[in-house]
Image 1 (spheres, rainbow, N blue to C red):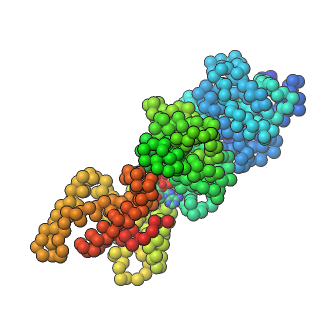
Image 2 (image 1 turned 120 degrees about the horizontal axis):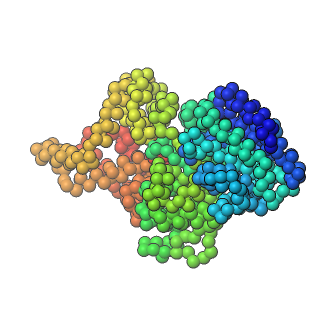
Image 3 (image 1 turned 45 degrees about the horizontal axis):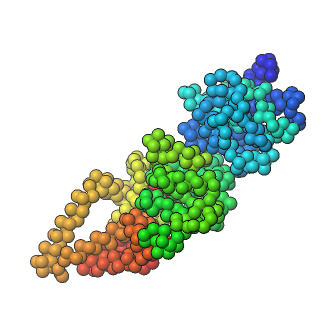
Length: 585
Ligand SMILES: Nc1ncnc2c1ncn2[C@@H]1O[C@H](COP(=O)(O)OP(=O)(O)OP(=O)(O)O)[C@@H](O)[C@H]1O
C-alpha cells in the first residue's frame, strides 16, 4: 500500500482514538481500521482469490493475565460473543517474547514473521515449529479460518500488553502465510497507535452480571472479570485463576464449571496444600492394588473421578517436579495411567482449572516449576483481585455472610450490621480476604447472639462486636501457637487444682487428650468436611482405609465427655459440631 493510501486510515484512526472514551470505543476503532486496511490489501493482491476478512480481536493482557477480550465481526462490526474467539497460548508466548507479528497459514501450518531486529521476513524459523498445535489448527479450520495474522500491542514501557488477531478466509491461497505481506507494516503501525489508548481508557460501564448462589456478590472490579470467565468457560481450554489466599478462587472455578458445557458432570478439587508430595501422583492418577506399600485395593484418582467434568487443581505451585512431568503429559496427550497399571493408557476427558496464589513465573525462574508446564496451563489466565481491590463489594459480602450464618443457626427475624460497623470493616486490611471476613462475621455473630440472649427483635452486629472479633483475630495472629497451647495447658492445670480442692470430679491427664478432638473439630469447621480435615492433619492412612469417620466419632466422643465433665459455656460453632451426627454438607 502506498504512503498516500496509508495516510487516510491513519488519520481516521487517530481522530477516532482521540474521541474514544472507553476501551471498547478504542478497540472498535483499531479493529475496524485494521480490518479495512487488510481487506483492501488482500483485494489488490492478484495471488489471492476471493479473500474474505472474518473478524478481529483485541486480547488485552498486560502482565500476562487477561484483563479484557474484545472482538468484532467483519464487515458488520457486531461484537463477538461466547466462543467467537480464537486463542492460542503458544502464539501469545511467541509474540510476547519476540515483540513482532506472526502470520499463520492454517491449512498447512505455515508460519512467517519479521525478525525481531529488523524487517527480514522469515518463513518458519525453527523456533516457531509447534507454534500452532493441531487442536488450535482444527478449531480454526472448523470455523473456516484459513489465515491468521497476530500483531503485538507494545506498551510504552517496552513490554507487550496484548495482541490483536485478524482472521481471514482465503481458500485459494492455502499454502501462503504471506497473504498479509502487503499490509503487515501498516497493521503494525495502526496497532502501535492504538496500544496506548487501549492501555489507558477505562472499560465501558461494567457489564450487568447477575449474581447467583455461587457468586452472590459481584462488584465493579469483578464484573468484567466474571464476563471473561464466562467466555473462557465455553472454550474447554485450561483456565488459570491466580489470586491471594481466600479471595474466592475455588468458588470461581466452580462457577466456571457451571457455566461450561460440562455443567451437571462431576466437579473435583485437588488441593495440593493438603497432599504430601509423595502422594500427589497417586492422588492425581489413582493406583492399582499393590502399586505401593499400603495400596490394599484399586483406587481411582481425581482425574478419573472428574471424567467428563472439571478438575480444579489448587495451589499448583506445590506440585512436585515429578508430578509436574506427569500432569504435563496428561495436558499434552490427554492420556494417563494409574500407578501400577500395566494396561493401556486411559483417556482423560477432563477440563482443567488451575488455581494459585504464587507468582508462577517467579517459580519458573527459581527452577521450582517447569517452564513448559507453566505455558501449558497459562492458556486462559485471569487474576482474581484481593478484597482490598474491590472494597465496593465488602458491605455486600459482610451482609451475605451474616445472612448465611443466621440461616445456618436457624435464627428467627432479620440479622443486620450497623452502619458504623460496616464503616469499620471497610477501613480494615484484609490479608485473608473473603475467608477472613467470613471468620470475623461469624465471630461477631456469636458475640451479638450472646448479647441478645433473651431479648427479641433483629439481631444486630454492632461496631463493638466487630471490633472485638477483629481484636481477637489480631491477638490470635500475634501469639505463637506454642504460647497459646501453653496458656491452655496452664488453664487445664488450674482447673485440675480447683477440682483437687473439692470442686467436681478430678481432671486426669488422660482427659487432656480431648485436645486431639478439638483440633479435628476445628479443622472440620475450617475445611468444611472430614476428609479435608484429616488430609490437612496428615491422616492419609486413615483416609485411605476409609476409617476416618470412625476415628472422628471416637475423638468427638472424647470431647463431649470432657465438656460434660468441665461444664461451662461452649462456643457455638463447637457446639454445632458436637451435636452433628453426620458429615456436614
Ligand atoms: N462465591 C462465594 N460465595 C460464598 N462464600 C465465598 C465465596 N467466595 C469466597 N467465599 C468465602 O471465602 C472463603 C474462601 O474462598 P475460596 O476457598 O474460594 O478461596 P481461595 O481463593 O480458593 O482460597 P485458597 O487460595 O486459600 O484456597 C470461603 O470459604 C467462603 O467463606
